[in-house]
Amino acid sequence: QVQLVESGGGLVQPGGSLRLSCAASGLTLDDYAIGWFRQVPGKEREGVSYISSTYGGTHYIDSVKGRFTISRDNAKNTVYLQMNSLKPEDTAVYYCAADPSGIGTTIATPYEYWGQGTQVTVSA
Image 1 (spheres, rainbow, N blue to C red):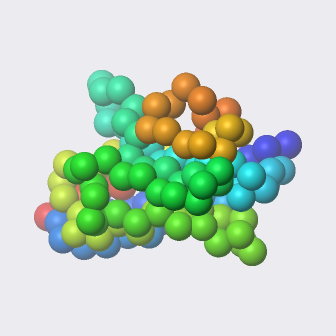
Image 2: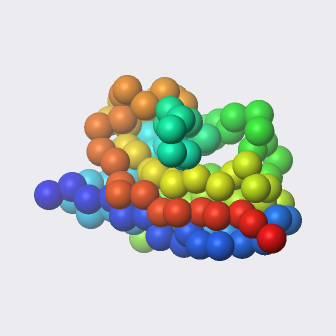
């Protein structure tokens, strides 16, 4: 049974940092592209970043570039999203997802497995 479990969310002040974790069971994350998405109530899910297994590269949307960093720890079968200089507009439920093509994209459609999400709230 495949399971992705996010953790590390919480309440943080503007300018603060959080590190989200996406731990997998039932699959080897290194065989998949892993994406981080976020969703605010009433809005569509937004792809934030991904790490490709095909070419090993990473991608970020412009609004988080320079502030967020995605990384893998293959020994722990875990992918991380380090979020620095957080802003109130980063507030959302954050999800990780696994794309079996290995390529990665910020579009949700190719992702086959999803976690349950973790809430990130940035507020003073």
